[in-house]
Length: 243
Length: 382
Figure: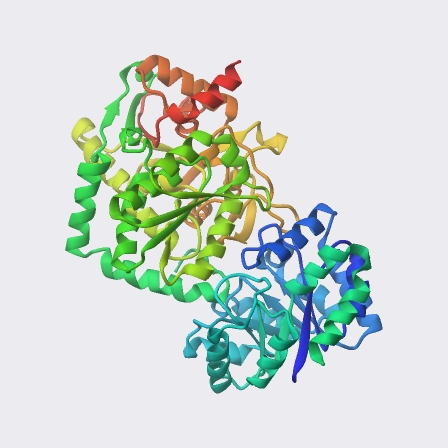
């Protein structure tokens, strides 16, 4: 699913579902992550928190995320990962939620607050339906846990640092160490995210062996700054990240 | 470790190792004689344990039952919170952590955390929803006097749940040096067990005391439930006994008004703050805003063990409204000369709502004193 891929993150419904779709179609990327807004996003820093709260106060509903996915799939064959907090899935019903996601053309599900040890039923439902899973790992994840994550994941989303999502100045030594270890333990591809926002970050991580890099908060900031006109900026920004 | 289907460890992967470290340290420490001795010393000589079990004779006469009050309001800081903060601060030291973070709603847990941190020489940062920060200025000042840094949380609904979110975010970055001293029987495993165990000293004492005073176990025990730490603390040592256990949630302006904090009585199953439990939420799993006159009960969820005890039927859960709690607050003040916390007043209010208690022996957990609430009560009575 990933191979030296640029993965970009968009918060659904920020500022509206139509705009999210438009922005996604502007982005120059290989894989798309669509973030489902949640009232209590404990893994996210200020930029994505604000995007989620804005989306919710603009009336975001889960069907809007599915609408975006469906429309995106009609116009693009790029891979699409739905990034979730667990409660909306649990509350909707795992089966119903995953069915919806699958029928909208979503390729994989990532649930930030659902570690694999709590995910038996979820993984089973996804498997039965042909939906793929992506699990997080972190620099402090043990080899033993990495192996279990490797087993269950289409690719592994390696969180590059301690803390929450957000733009950071540079990629830490901790991230490179974690990447090297993950590469040696896991057979599946590794994508690195959290704090990736610059061209140098992207090329450094690819050089260090990353199979994908995820850019999130930096894009959210562009939307925050340019509002409805952010599309062109996102196009420019994502194109520049790669070359 | 779960309570039936409830509880669990629903956290981002980065928090799994710190939770495992905590669980391991707690299991090593909990039966350690040195630790027990040290904790016991602080609980007695610093916090003021054991607390009396007081026979409230005037209230008993008025209500037609024998009412005993477990006087947690007499503890240092004015609430049961210090039982847990002293113990967890010692645990943090044992783990080699130099910094404490905690969430607080009204400020009682924040104050108790600041006290324990000052006492044990730990750096302390308290997260508090920006709305609560405004409403509870005096407690903010108390925490600062005690040497804590208090951070107002501006995101989300700007209340307790957002303070917990922010503490979890801090911990995901700082766990190497920092212990998250959670204030109730909530959060990912092992927090609900740790807090319940440290608070169960309330029930252990009460059990011994009532056997001395009445030569028998009580017919019922009543406690208020927000997150549920004082209730778990007094219920736990009685779970295997033939004693009615009754938890009273904040009914706010009435369940039908939608403005309340009664997650067991009116909520549904969900996952937040690392646990599977009952929450107030909409049909798509967005967490709802809550209301209670008692800031300490103003939380959209409840500890997972309470969720289990509700579904298993072992504990009965009911509600008292703002108004009923306020009446009970005034009644206890006038009849006994004891001003209860508005939280504890919910438990007292229940006594008048249950005819079947007449003639029986009842213990109410008086979890805190009401001095902190005088401003709110003054506003309402105006």
